Image (tube, rainbow over the protein chains, first blue to last red):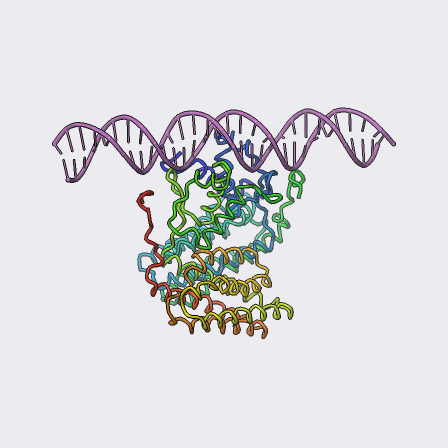
Length: 245
Length: 245
DNA sequence: GCGGTATATTTCGGATCCGAAATCAACGAG
DNA sequence: CTCGTTGATTTCGGATCCGAAATATACCGC
């Protein structure tokens, strides 16, 4: 496909994107032959791509049976957020010592953009009207944090943290059925502001603590949403029988 | 090989072990055909194993050129230890709330075992006499921490932390040429004791802070060793030319 | 009808084969 | 002598093929 990359890599990225975007629901069985004709390649690069995804933990691999998109339990989700909280705290602490005025400007822009979308979001009625911009909201959120990662310049931390934030299927679940969590959207935006100001003040310890709390509060926000919707989340394991446990 | 596992998985584990043990030095080029005749299989499972290792970050993959055992820079090593420090701190904090008396007993046994080996180590002259028990020392150290992981019961944290501690080639580099870091061995053992006591006291915050400092001080210990030996560590990239940068 | 066995079908893991990219070697022009 | 070009060799990525494992279906005795 593109210059210098194998089909296996390209395909792995496409499938990965499909998984994290929620297009492929957790529990879905991935058949090698189906994928091979879908991408117009043989099964060889498909298998290599699936190996990669398995190593990344995005799919579970059962010898001689097949692969399934990983379902995530409440405990695993919690753990992923705890890990992200620690890593984000570390990155933010390190960023505090390195951040330049241009970075702060960029961070503020990202913060404003996120605040705007959050406001827009709260002004809409729950349902499809919200769901349609949920993707933008998630992206704007990530954009803010990505500035910090770039400044911190810790590739491993960034990689692991992003992997942790991929562990649940993004935008699909962030849109609840009523207004009950509107204030949490607002809170999120406020936290971004606080983090930026701590960075601007050069307070490494303060920025660190704020970043940690921010991620953990995001988890509680997500948790309350999922409790409401009620089990969008252990996922009934459709056709789990086909791949007997 | 063993019941229910593919050759690709088995081979990946063998190669992984060879890498983390230092048997395969960083920079080594891995040829598919060579490995295939070494394991008496075709290149297909070899490639899948290499994909897995690439996803885990143990080897670097360059399309159409080959794979090399990952060399790790000083910055990357530092980052790996920072990540481990955060994750270990988290696991230890969580463990503080869950730990039972049996666990404390086991932890104390692991601590004593480690202290014994450390003492033995310090009583020996640098060189082969030390190098021969360095593996035991590393294993005893890991054993102590593994008790904490088990108690914390955070599989993802455990997996990531262990992956981070694999990022440099274990026992091979921990043995310096003189007595200059003997006190650091002792310090390490003391820190284990402090962590255990904090856990026994039920102090989550204290245990957390101690665990973090412990890992970071291990890094400084390693750093001083490597500075001495002088460049055991960026690894001259032997036959780097063959795989031109 | 019901449970268990035998057979067919699906799907996977691994081996072999082939074209393409990259490296290496010989060569020749400046 | 150096540098770029061209052809041979190595090594890789991907396609195809085959045997084995697992699942689904058909059959048969009870």
